[in-house]
Length: 295
Image (cartoon, rainbow, N blue to C red; front, top):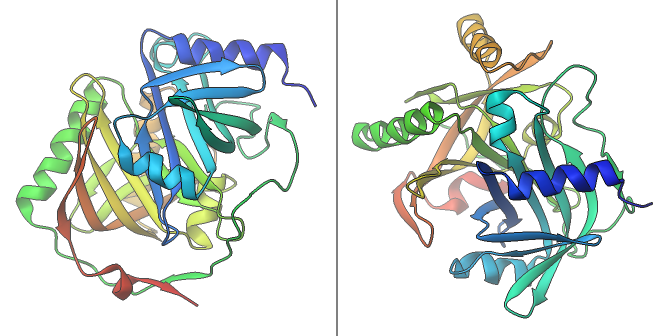
């Protein structure tokens, strides 16, 4: 199956947009999705050539676990709501010279709008393509950690700056049966000591993964400064009608409308301060062995 010209053109627009978001996701040895910033990106045939330097951790993980998902979004088109364009591109990555080369196996649209099913690939090369042998049934040692107020304030501050610039956050999950990471844009609408709230379509892959369940990583990133925060943890569902309305109203204010929204509360067990080159842990509830469990 060939990648259609209209999809190629859309990916090129997302890559070359004056205001773009380009991130990727790979898993680590625990099965935790790890997001990274893309510093260079180019569509070449049925592959994407990209660079993540000087993020050494991302390079090392991709060498061990080549299954990678890229989020390529033309934010300029979304803010103007003119032919809004964004994709998740999945495939196998390997080192090629100074860069990495992703052989494309699946492409998904990531912009919620009428008539578009975000859970169906708009391009698929083959159904089974994961290279790393991986199958885990996750469970979590749940409890509500108490995050220090100064760290919570820092997370909220980064989120508010990102929202003021029209920038969403990135929610990363994992398909536990294949080990293929999933990275999708989401608005983190509410952040309190009880969790970071975001909405999702009941049919979307992100929602399916968190309910299986999957470890979750959320990256909140401010593009101009190249600074952000990364939370690693797990998700529970919320039945709060007030929170549901808050999320729905926020989505509508950004021109998105989904008929069935599931409300999720993200509980970070680890929080990192992120720059273009580093990840510095600033908070940890307990060792991973106490909350990231396998059944």
